[in-house]
Length: 178
Image 1: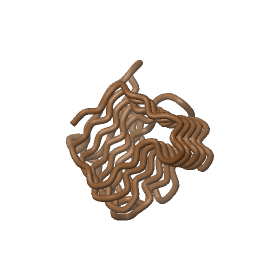
Image 2 (image 1 turned 45 degrees about the vertical axis):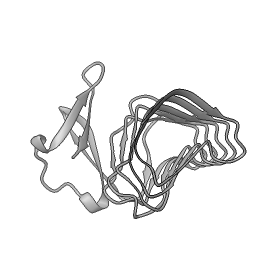
Image 3 (image 1 turned 90 degrees about the horizontal axis):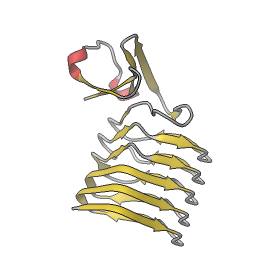
Image 4 (image 1 turned 90 degrees about the vertical axis):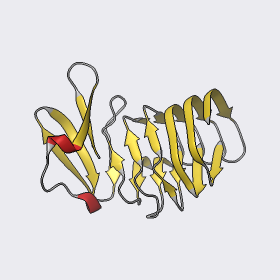
């Protein structure tokens, strides 16, 4: 299923609250001014995609993954002015999620906190600097802007054929390990 070009605003609780869903794409949406999380994936979710989904001005986190939310992709999304974390991956049972090119600004607790397993984050490409909590390692090479991986996936031997490189603007490259 695909949900696109929608606005979800000013609810007393979460803007979107998802349990036991799979294979859904959310594209070009605005989720803001809600009394809880902008988007919460509670449990039993897998293979959800959020592309160009703005989470703005929610009382708590912009995005929150709890319990077992696996293979969630958040890409090219603005996460701004939220009362908690921009993106909160709250449980170690959230596996193999990807955060690709987010734009953060003014989230009260910070940009990303990650308790998940196997999470991959590419550097954001616009608003402010990317900061994450937890043990993260950054590898920088002249021809790649950077690679981020969590402490359970430390980079000890880098092989350029084992990653995906996406180019955007003026020669900048961001790389996500696969």
